[in-house]
Image (cartoon, rainbow, N blue to C red; front, side, top):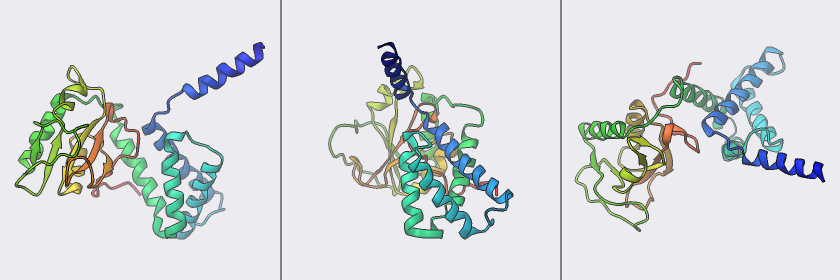
Length: 236
């Protein structure tokens, strides 16, 4: 009876552990790159684009089958496996893994970033200066389909309710939705440069008409892969 109870408690303890996505995604891609480098060093794998991509597709498949990594990165592995099988060498997994590794390492170089209300306000001012129309005056979440009328091509809208409810004092404590229309690439560049990691929910069909939706998380600790700016260069 005692052994049964101990087994139950151990199993419960394992299930109750919540994996940190930002840590696990870095662990995943860094493990893949390290394993591939070891194969190069041992002379078992040619350091060539086609050979490297084939190796990483097989590596991803093995990682899925053996459940080597936590569930929080399972969707990424499945997506990369499908891309590798359908696109072949054009999947570019080596390029992608290096970008993810370098981007997350840079974003968390100083540890977790506390996101403040003043940071968001400064970003909104920044976007207005860049010619974007910014709206924070209307409730947007759980209000059905909303349409915001703007004159400009580029629009950024935040839910008026979330501007209060997502903060404890001046600190972001809940995920917050940012709705974007227009130049998404510029938005990602600007947000990243301002210290935010943004996580795409949808490009276009959100509950705010003609706007895509992105999430920012407390401490930039997202639960999915963050958007990486097109201009970001990983060391080769």
